[in-house]
Figure 1 (cartoon, chains in turn red, green):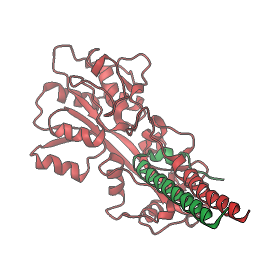
Figure 2 (cartoon, rainbow over the protein chains, first blue to last red):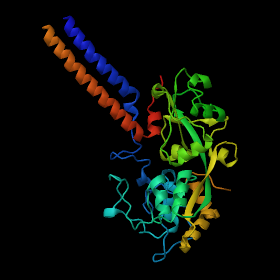
Figure 3 (cartoon, rainbow over the protein chains, first blue to last red):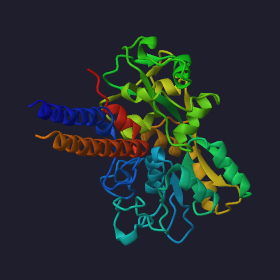
Figure 4 (spheres, rainbow over the protein chains, first blue to last red):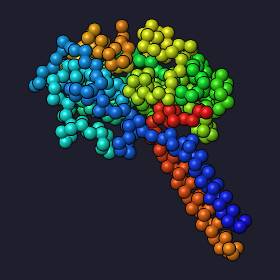
Length: 327
Length: 47
């Protein structure tokens, strides 16, 4: 009987360990949109130009490209898909967004199936930026490029023009159940420098802080490195994965595109990242987002499109997308 | 149950348990690297 009890206890021990790992980590691992195994940052099908049900800013435009003239190819970061898809919807002729096989699909190993001749591409920040430098994309919508990306362009001998076209807040978020609603800039920096390790040190529960980071070269990671002034933790306490997480992103990505009611944005220095607080400058961590193009790209419609983005019509569209205009 | 049989059962269960746990940990590490941090935070347990 004792031997059977020992066997049962050993089985229970392994089951308990695996159940604990599942409950605290494995259960929480998922892509935002996962039809296949590859990472999908957003559901691009919600932002397809010329589709009746798309969630685009159809604010109209006096700039209308015609079939037969050169149509600049647009690409951008995940968080800016609604912006450049809305540009196409407002300014381009119907039929210029094409898909391999004739219909949109994101159920592919490599992601979305925009055809090579489509004016809309979606390769996200890292691949898309390289495509711009390599001359396969005309205009790239992004947060400020990272030093590595600018170096890539420099190495290729490509001069880039970066034109700010809108404002966005850089936000920090936690689980809705976390009692902390706000942090100061210095507290955030201390957390990401490993100086503050427990939520109780910032008025929260007695729980380790799990400071999450993003993929190197992504827009939000580049922004975070700038915010941290080059002094950021490289390794974390392994036990922190069982603690309460904090992450960062751009406001519209978190509140609009990948909104989740179980996540809340934090006030910073007592100011919530609302559109109004971004516009009036009271929210302390705002950044421009840019349209980037090659200085040697002489296609006439490239400059025209950039000028339109800066016009009242373009800025109205950016506001309607959920971002904050420059004015 | 003889002692020998008991020992064999213990070894088999331990080996299977260790391999299964290691595979689980490896899967979790790989999936964590590709996971959405928004989803990871959203599914956090707060009593």
